[in-house]
View (cartoon, rainbow, N blue to C red):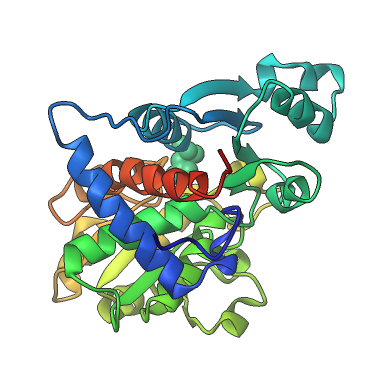
Length: 309
Ligand code: CP
């Protein structure tokens, strides 16, 4: 049986093209499973998974939990705001105590970049990064690519623009790595203050004119402005940001072609995207969420195959 080249999923940076193809092929099978009347398979009855969320989440947390339960794994959930982290317990102590309860796989969201890599060097369990600070969000990028492949047939040669707050976005970095591995062309577009200085060294096009960016692309992946990660002011006002970079119907009608709209969520309706665009036929936002469960089932299943009996 084919295996992943990695022993954890810490970032797309560590994957190769064959890994992504294997994850997608496995996700195709699980997508068929979750559309059956009985959406569950017994594959991971002997596996225990802990979901550790040190940062807020709706989609990723629920999607992982559902994926684990649909694989019949035993699941425990941990939220840092209701835990002994509040009493000063360290990350390694927290995880070591959880592992003492015979846990095989840790799914972790953490506000610090590199938290998953750090943990993988200190503990003996499979780690899946569910988003680490402004660094990577690998399962989001996998589900985004899978959704593009489903919509357009292939990623090879397709043009994808990531719009908005690139500086604070782990979704952007993971998407850049994943899209390039699959032969897509990538552009970033946003205010210069929200574009990292190193961004062009990643081989992406850089554009600050939203209309030109939309005219260039086949797909626009619209990102949230991450106010919670901003220490100072990156643009004069939300109103000005929306005027210059917000995606609305008038702008989409003016580009002379139909493009596909994506958003990883959570959406700031009326800020980076208007409700009529987010809810339009052009948008595949809820398809992304649906595909997230199949992708996470695939990642968990493939990593679990490496665990000795
Ligand atoms: N896309 C995403 O990571 O959403 P959540 O923060 O709700 O998990």
